[in-house]
Image: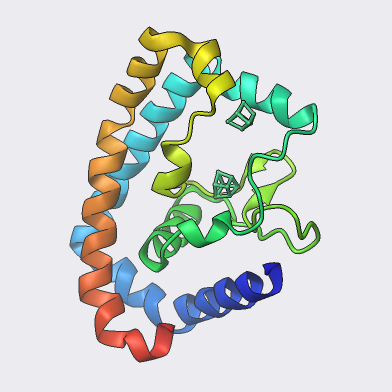
Amino acid sequence: MLDDSIKYFKNLEELYRNFFRKKLKEDIFIREKLDSLLQAINNSRKAFIETGSFEFCAKCARAGEKCCQAGLEWKLNRSEFFINLLLAEKTGFSIKLNLERPDDCLFLGEKGCSLILTPLFCRNFFCDKLSKFLGHKKLIKIQHAMEDEAIISFQLADYINKKYIIPYLSMVR
Ligand code: SF4
Ligand code: SF4
């Protein structure tokens, strides 16, 4: 239900603003990792652009394919959501929630995903027609380019989870 996810992520965003943001921003480990993560995300994006993957998916979406469906927002965990809010502030973007299209993922905007760090599930999703379009060589190129993003985002999310989420679990349920 989109209503449940809207409530959940809005509540999490409010908690972030009122309680977690300051703590996370003052943490030196997080500050350093965010810089390398941003760099890694840019490298992955470059590979998606160079291989024509973004363009292929954009065309497919314009043709009406429903790929980013409602419910997939739950693939993003709390730490990854906080990482997105930190990255959004750092880069001057904002994470806009889809409040109008109940069949679409909560993070699907007019021009595609509004997240900066997407969930692992989405990063690893290559449908049959996209895989066929890319072919083996380009798929390997993308997967190779995404390795740093996967490693750094895992380290950062794990750190935030252990140090900031688990101790305050009663607040963020
Ligand atoms: S992943 Fe597949 S279904 Fe989804 S937008 Fe790309 S080509 Fe279309
Ligand atoms: S890529 Fe973004 S919009 Fe699409 S399903 Fe994943 S989180 Fe949702």
